[in-house]
Image (cartoon, rainbow, N blue to C red):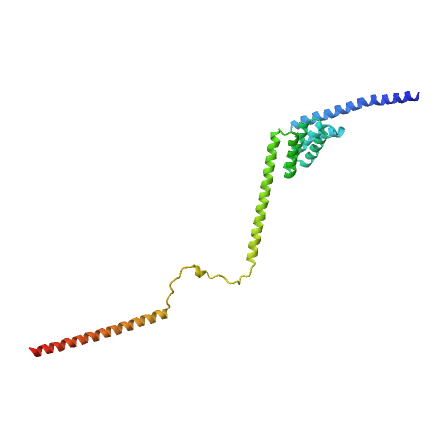
Length: 238
């Protein structure tokens, strides 16, 4: 008798739980439909409320979780969106393409947050699951280029800092160090004559000219005397 009573009690509990579970699922579906409707109307705050209620009622609802992540993404709440997408890929064990889409969206959210390394890893994870996704492959190429450009910029900044440090060290060196004679690199220039030297040279030239004229006059005088002497002799012969 006791055994029969126990079986009857279990049967009652099972049958009583069926309507409750069905009602909960209907409420989940109702909130998802309302959330989808306002999401299409770009009322993302209201959509987040509906999808959030659906997730509270059924934490294993993949649709509600994924859509809630999309709603957070539209509101630029990248961390919350990432959290929902990560929950979705944990729940999605049956459809690889849907799981790949979750990883793709994680990459998008991390890229918006400028977490380039995490975005790259998420895109790689998505491609491991679905290698034929061209959009994910394109996004991966974009983020890889951004990482390379970032590394190049950091290297350029490091080199500029090193150059600035070297310039500062050179500027701080003592200024009384012997300098090279730059005149040796220039062609020889004629030395300029001082005024005193020019005056002395001019006086010497004038003296030489006077002496020369005096000698010329003496020579001419001697020549005149010789001619006069010859004339006198000639006159005597006549």
